[in-house]
Image 1 (cartoon, helix red, strand yellow):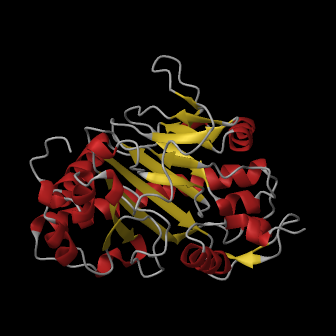
Image 2: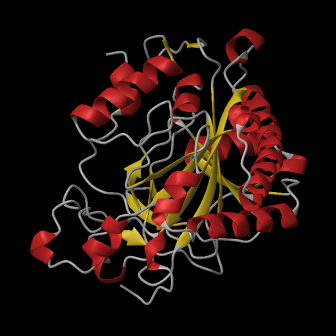
Amino acid sequence: MPEISNLESYPPVFWQLNGAPQSQISELKGYSMDDTTQDRVPANPVVDPIPVLDLQSLSLDKVGDVCKDWGLFRLVNHGIPLNLLSKLEDHAKKLFSLSFESKQALLTSPMSYFWGTPALTPSGTALRGALNINWLEGLNVPLSQLPQFHSEDPMLDCFRHLLEEYGKHLARIATTLFEAMAMNLNLGPKQSESKLEESTGFIRVYRYPPSGSMADEACGMIPHTDSSVLSIVNQDQVGGLEIFKDNKWLLVNPIPNTLLVHIGDMMQAISDDEYVSVQHRVRVNKEEERLSICYFVFPAEGSVIHSTKYKPFTYTDFQEQVQKDTKTLGYKVGLQRFKLH
């Protein structure tokens, strides 16, 4: 593994596997970043193909085009203060730099600390049963429950306030974007009502340790689509996010002061498959750790999604099916389970 001054901050399995003989690396055999036969296209730092939307001057036609063709776009002029983003990132790095045992002890309900998988139960604990270990650790933060979190640790208390402020900005952004999408799709009030509920929003902060000698086997996050209506990502400058577009994996450049907005499975179903839930994955850097702060928002509890492509379902129905598939198959099947045949 590359020289890391704070090795004890990582989940033990990561640095244990990193120094293990190849014959002992059995936990990572479910998926390798080189398992896929599709070509991988590096991003061009000068000409970046990812479409850009300006929150202050949204064009409904362009919103529709990028959601149908890409399922992902960059967002500029989002209105989040730069100092809030930098403080949030700094506090997240400090928290992750604590020892593995300290994080497990400090990050208590309603926050939760997890590692090795992004698949969590509704209560925020890691859902074991995946076929492989994802090379990550994370914090799960349900924003509606955040006021219940109290800590005598000054850093944690400050982190809570930063998350609350950040969450308010993301709820504003998500609502604005969803309203534009609903207009582009010509959804009536009843069709769009309760399909995006601010109280469902939560934040995941991910740290991806450097892969070191595990570069060929370690996978930051396996290919997947998000289950959300919308996901909004703030990634650091290390990079590693890739999307699957035109039968190729495309590296998404990190660009300062921009957000990445993903269309999720719920939005694809709401749009009657006009919008696409983008498949993506994360590659880990061999020498540098990567940090990303992600916001996910969902339909209101009990809100039924009606579509000509899928049988009626609620997000709870969808979530229960995803949990079941992850436990039994080791991976998420997703919308295909609800498809009308």
